[in-house]
Each structure stands twice: as C-alpha cells, then as structure tokens.
Length: 287
Image (cartoon, rainbow, N blue to C red; front, side, top):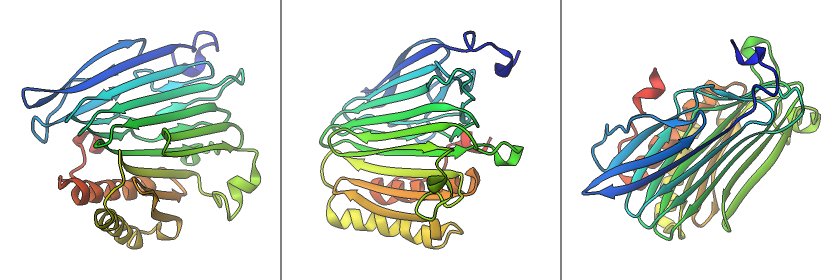
C-alpha cells in the first residue's frame, strides 16, 4: 500500500525523537529514544572516536497534512555530532488543507559542535508544510547546518503550481530567517526580486555562540566565495556575515543537484577553514 492510497485520517501521525550526545572516556556517544516512525541508526565513526556520525531515518519518508515530526537534539560539552539522512524529506499534498510539520530543536553545550546536514526537503504540489529548525548555542559552541528545499518535481512533470511551504531557521535571540513560499504568489515565484523561476533554494550556516574573530570570519568567507565564483550558479549565490557570529551561504537554482553540490563544497571548505577537519562527504551521500 502506498501513502497516496491511504485516507487522510490513516496518514496522520506524530513522531518524536530525542538524541543526546556526550563525551564518554574520549568517545562521542549518543543515547536516544523515540515515539512513532522516527529512528537513529547505528552510530558511525569514520573520523575516529571524537566525532559521532548519525543517520536519522523516517521510514515512511514523507508527511501529509496533520503529520508532525518533532526532533530534539542535545550536544553536550565538548561533543561533536554529525547528523544526516539517507533520503529526502517529502511533504505530500494536503487534501484537507492542514499543516504537515517538521520541527527540529538542537541545544549545544560549551565546546560542542553540531553538523546538521539532512538531505533536501521536497514540497510536492498541493502541500501545506512547515519546516522549522532552531539551534541554541552555548558561548563556545559552534554549528554547521544547512537547509535545501525543492519546490515540486519538475523532472516528473509535477511543477509547484499549488501549495504553501513555510521555512523557519533560527538561532534564538541572534538570527532568524522565516518565509512563506506560496505557489500562488507570482511575484515571489517568478519575479526578479524573488525566485526568478528557480525551484530549489539552499542555505548553509556556520554559527558560533559568540562573535567570530574577524580574521577567521574573513578567511571562511573568502574560501566559499572562491568556490561560488567558479560555480555555474555563481550569479544566483552569495556568502555573507549575517551577524558577527553567523556566516551564511545562500543559493537558488533550477533543480536540487547543482544547489546541493555547491553547498557540499562550501561545507567542506568551512569544515577545513574553521575546524581544520577533512571535508570528505559521508559515504551515505554517494549511495
């Protein structure tokens, strides 16, 4: 039975996951609990004990109106977690007009690092969706996170001609980006000051709990600006310091693949420039 064959009532559920990362005898470990169809797979250590790689899995792979995914992550003092997903998150058509919601809240302790790197969210035609992520950072914590949104499935002949997709990215008290992507808003969807006909948009964020030292900040921005300048999407991408403690890369493109590839290169550059770590992508991304 496919998700499209179920009734609206059958398809509604609440799923919760809580994951807590901590350092235990020099190894970053995670404990987690869940309710409903939301899981963390086995911890992986391709970079050694200090960095715990986790794969977040939502077996149904999609949400319809009335569904909620509620994800809470804590990264304790000195811990380093990298969280990704094996596939896209799909927000399906909402036949009842009710919201489908994915909500993520992460708390980072002193000296903690979190890399929040899910694959793209796909807004199907007719969806009514909220995709929200909030990250609270202790003064010496640091974050690398991205958000990639694809509107419709142009390759499958399903353009985003109806529906609403609301995005919410926040570092409380420091930085907030929130916007409603409404298929009926022609000025936003087609206008030169809006998406200009593009149907994929991506954001990569590096954030610190306090101001980033100026030389370090400029070095990081120069690294990604060089990549952007050499990329085919250079005219629709840019990097800036949104705040003294927040660096942002933004890009729009016609489809997911070129947007994601540029953000992956920028993520790798920031990982090297800011943390001195290798930017080799997780093996999961190439499967």
